Image (tube, rainbow, N blue to C red; front, top):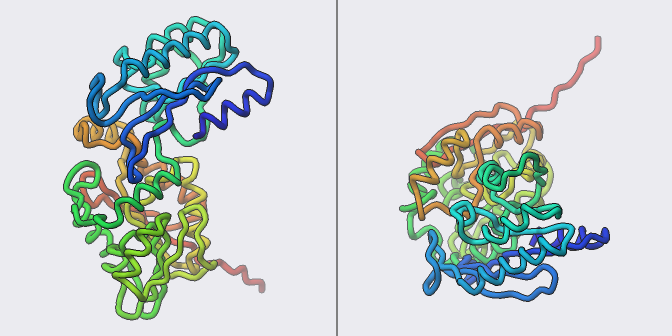
Length: 358
């Protein structure tokens, strides 16, 4: 957990650090709840699960004992610590529950307060906490899955992946969006195609011609095994956006569907540099994902979807993706909206220009 690394760094500098972390409870790669951990001693108590008993809030049921344990720790930190860390401050605290009682004591102390907050709630939490100035860090946002947790999620869902058709939530219209995005990819006879986050291979299969050499990269070895069963001719590798196990300048097209959003914004540019490294000069990329034109659009979708919204994801904004691609050196950027919740961002690796002397 990023909050644990931060705590250790602060302690190495001789600071008295206390507070709470909120580790996930996982089952078959899916988050089914959270625990609460004392940062000073490592002691843990149940915080919430996705089933009763407990205090219901959104899709979780919170343990009164776990909440009392957490608030006592935060109040104790307010009396004794130089730095108070509170992990996972969000809608429950904004509604007056959760860690709110402890945070009221923390705000009145002289300690430096570190809160982990989802990006979409930073300004709202700042207003609620009456924080006039704040420093934000480019670390994995609170509540998001780590890369290992994402791998576990897809390992656990590989056997049924794609059979649900994306009929609800942010993936509504999944199959239709795949088909529309596939029409935007140009792969010539005998060319190489790379699919990042290939999963079961359904997107690549809609693009590839009979003589296309298809390569696929995925975090999940279980997904790769299923893809290998369906597409034995594909060249499959375990990997991810930030470290593609593929040669330089080897592919005429790079594609990805519903995988880019597993990155955090600070990683976007690095991901595009890897994509451009893999492309031949003049080769193009097509990324399909749950994207939004602006923050108000993203918040409107969050409200409209209600409990179907996934708070463990930060779905990217189109301008942020375009800016990262441009900064990485991509050319010819175009964004296409293919459904109410899905966009395609496409571009290319520029051709080299040669200066000619007279």
